[in-house]
Image (cartoon, rainbow, N blue to C red; front, side, top):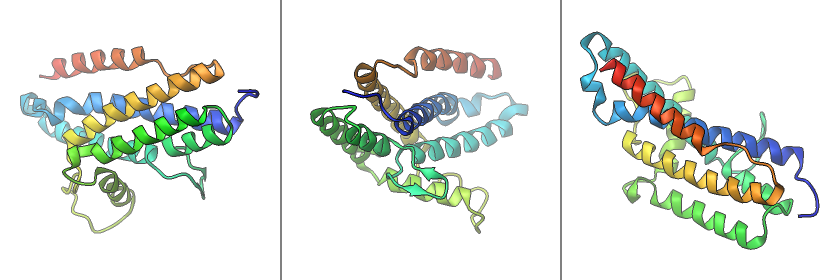
Length: 199
C-alpha cells in the first residue's frame, strides 16, 4: 500500500471492531441464560434473569444486524458494516484483490451457514431489528420471533472470529492494530464468575 487509509476507512474499521467485540461480550453474558442457567437462579432473581435474557438477545440481534448491513449512505451517514469495510479496503487498496476475494467469499459462506441452514438467520435478524426498534402492535412476550438464541450465540462467535481475522490482515497491511482477543477472553471469564455468584 502506498498511502495511509482515509479517516472514513479508519472510522469504519473501528466501528466494525467495536460491534464485533460488543456482540462477543453480549453473547458471553447471554449464553448462561439461554443454556439453562436461568432455571438455576435463586428464586428472587428469576424474573430479572428473564428480563436480562430478552434484553441481551435483542441487543445481540441489533449489533449483529449492524455488522451485516449492506454498504450505503443514509440519514445517519456512511454505513459502518463488514461489507462497507471490505468495500473501502478494496477501493483504497488496503488489501489486495486476492485478500478481498477471500474475505468476501468467507463472509458469504458464514451468512449462508448461519443457523445451520435451518432458516435465513440474516433476514430474520433484519426483521427482528425492525420490529424491536419500531412502535408496533407486537406482543411484549414475542421475544425473538424467528431467531433462536443459541443460533445467535454461535453466529456471534463466528462473526467475531471473522472480524478478528480480517482485522489481522488490515493490521499487517497498515501497521495499526485495534481489538485484542485477550480482552474478549477476560470478559468471558468475568461473566462466568458473575453468573456463578447468582446461582
